Image (cartoon, rainbow, N blue to C red; front, side, top):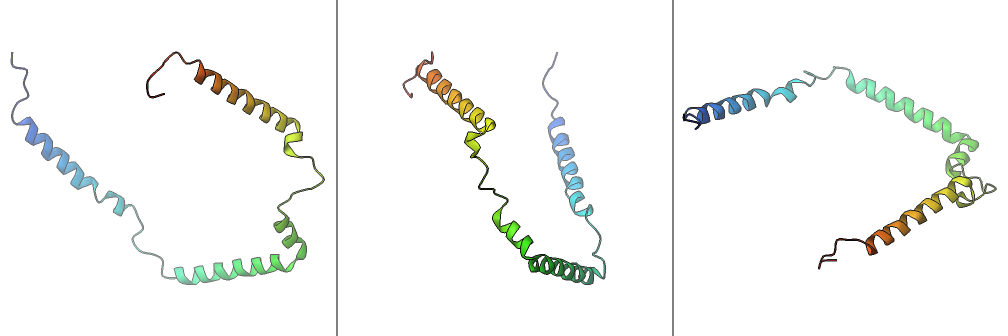
Length: 114
């Protein structure tokens, strides 16, 4: 029983792969639009003018400007690390660091590179 691959399979397979690549290569370029709309520049100009007008109106109000600059921080609130979530975060980080140091020093695998 002959289990070797026939001689014709190699070249045929190569031709099929090459044909598939040639057919699939232009597909991404065919997926785009054929041509941009004729009035694309006018629509863009109107959109930019609307955006500039909205920004100018927002900047003319002093309360909006001050709120955007302060970042919403309230100095009378407690520090994050004094809140319940902050304490839990510190405890979990400490436990994780401690476990990492413990497992590194008590590792069963010893190698010269360590």
